[in-house]
Length: 164
Image (cartoon, rainbow, N blue to C red; front, side):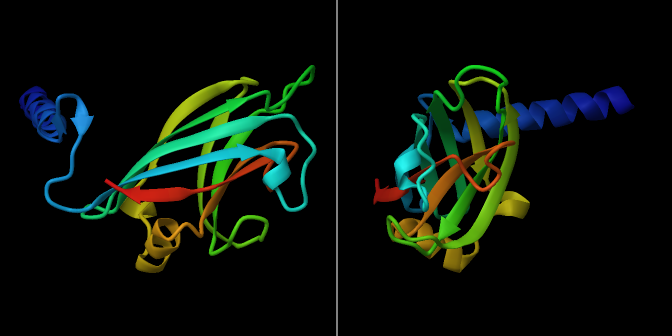
């Protein structure tokens, strides 16, 4: 019986994932969608960190289901040894470039590569509130990549949202 239930749940999951895509691209059922992007470096930190690291944020926000999915990429987060592993991406706002804002959300992850990328998201229990959504969509949100040595952020990037 447990095996039958497991197979049924797996089939439902596969069908659900298949139904959410069209041509292998995510599509919204009937809500507005936004492309969310941002380039990061140490000079955008307040105060600046003086590191040569860079990063990029490429995401997709679906307003109907209130889900932000994104890919973070980074280069040269640390050089030499010892390694300084990434621990989280933190979102702040409302804030214009060069101004610090309040912490909105933290997405924890771990990666010990000096350069790389990771796919993450905000939804479900960690979805954006109405106020946080407005901060994001109005360009008043920034992200910071955090490491063990820089728990408050090593690089920062202002996020820009464009309706699709």
